[in-house]
Structure formats: C-alpha cells, structure tokens
Length: 295
Ligand SMILES: Cc1cc2nc3c(=O)[nH]c(=O)nc-3n(C[C@H](O)[C@H](O)[C@H](O)COP(=O)(O)OP(=O)(O)OC[C@H]3O[C@@H](n4cnc5c(N)ncnc54)[C@H](O)[C@@H]3O)c2cc1C
Image (tube, rainbow, N blue to C red; front, side, top):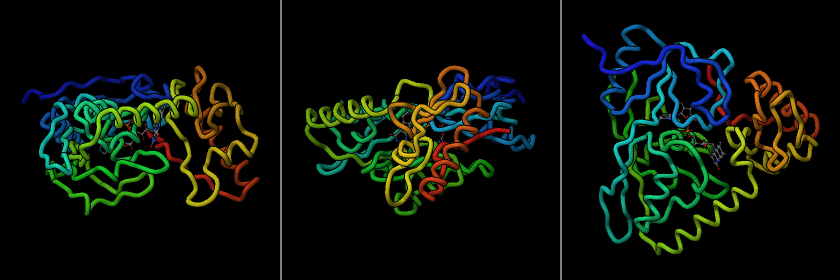
C-alpha cells in the first residue's frame, strides 16, 4: 500500500527551533491533516519507530546528535480558526493544534474577543502553548481552554477532554496523547480596548525580553515562592555569562541565548553553571522549563 504521507530523511532540526540548535531527525514529517497524522503514527507503531512531537519548536532544546526515530512537527496541522458557538457572555473558538498562537490572538482581536491578550508576543503553536500551559505572571492557557481533542498515538482513538478533566499547573499540562485541536472560551468585549491591552503587553515584552535573539524563552521555571528565576540568576552575578556562544542575556537573565553557533552542549554547560551558582548563593534549586529532546 502506498504511504499517505511524506518523510524527510536525516533532516537537520536547527531551522525548526527558535534556539537554532540541534542535530538531525532520522525521519521528519509535517502532516497537514489529522488523517495524515494518524497514518504516520500507524506507520511508526507498525515499524516500532519512536515518535517525538514538536510544535513551533520555541520551548525545546534539541541535542547535538539530534533525535532518533520519527519527529512529527504540527505546524501544518491547521484548518482555519473559526467560531463554533456563541452567546452574549462567551464565544467558543475552534482551532487545530498547528495554528500559531499569534494567529489566534489576531483572530480574537478582529472578532472583538477578549482572553488572549496575555499571549502577546509568545511564539509557537496553539498545541505547544496548551501542552506547556504558556502564559505570563497572571494568566495562562488554562484560563481559556474549554476542551481539547486528543489523539492516542497507540490506539489512534480521538477523544474530547473537557476543561474540568484537564490537569493544568504552572507551565505544565498532564497529558499523554497528542493535542490535535481545541475550543477556547473567549469573552466579547470592546475591540479598541483589546487592541490596546495587546499592544501594551507586546511592548512590555519587547522592552524587557530579548525576543528577537535565538532562544527558547525563559529557560528556568520561577520558584513557587520568592524571587523569580531571572532575578536569582541576575543577583548571582551571571548576566552576560558566556560559554562559547551560549550566553545569559544582558536584558533578561532567565533567557539563555544562542549568540551565534552555540551547541546544545554549550547551553547545557551554561545551564549547569547557573544551577550551581544559584544554589551556592541562595540554596535554591532551579528547575528547567525548556524541554531537552534527543539523543
Ligand atoms: C522569544 C520567546 C518568548 C517566549 N515567551 C514566553 C512567555 O511569555 N510565556 C511562556 O509560557 N512561554 C514563552 N516562550 C516559550 C514558548 O514560546 C511556549 O512554551 C510555546 O507555547 C511553545 O509552543 P511550541 O509550539 O513552540 O511548542 P514546542 O516547543 O514545539 O513544544 C513544547 C512541548 O510541547 C509538546 N507539544 C507541542 N505540541 C503539542 C501537541 N499538539 N500535543 C501535545 N504536546 C505538544 C512538545 O512535545 C514539547 O514537549 C517563549 C519562547 C520564545 C522563543
């Protein structure tokens, strides 16, 4: 039987990540439909090929040797954002996992819907944002998700999971399957006000974070209490600290940036140096937010 999908072989992963770091994937696929995704998973299962899932690659650090098996990138899994249901208080918006979060923000503003302003400037896909429970100090994806369509990679069964049954926590969602689509509950509001809040949030982000540098955003989670990770790193005297081209941002100390040709090894060495210094200074163990993938 002819394969109903296409595979790239030994494909470098650097261009698919915002860190611009990492070796190749043995096999890479960018499915355009849920059917194609199912075919890929069926093929992987039949041939016992391990599968790694990526969205926009903006919260991952890929190892220098790359990823063995099949990497599935969801960025082409998008069928258009649309309003599914609405009443005077709430509007439910449907989107597939590969839509960019920024496209969803634009859709919400264009339709005078409030709820996504916090996401101004957060890159990546909706699926990745939900899986990471992306957000800011005060708001996150958990606040707007109404339900998720989740595909079991083994049985290929598609299930709808309601918000009340989803285990969201700080930058985390407890989930075993692949998020293929979601419904969001947004609130009708004044368009000019939404636009203004969005622009303010974006400006704040651009002036306080190195958003155009190669990075994966904040590298460490903020501890539950006390100073945020960036402040702990800064007060440990590590701003600007560098191992080869891996560097602690001068603008925001929780951003580790690739200043040119950093390798995963450089970034992991810098991570260890930061963890040790912060621990020696404050007796606090930092936890990584960025997910390290690969061999
Ligand atoms: C400049 C910059 C600024 C950032 N600012 C913020 C910020 O303000 N707040 C914040 O929270 N984050 C921020 N981030 C981090 C990142 O953008 C978010 O975590 C984003 O939501 C990740 O989405 P992604 O599609 O890139 O996920 P990826 O990095 O591709 O994947 C992240 C994880 O999610 C899993 N995943 C991806 N898609 C799915 C899916 N469909 N189903 C199940 N699991 C999936 C992957 O397997 C992986 O483990 C920033 C990053 C950068 C580079």
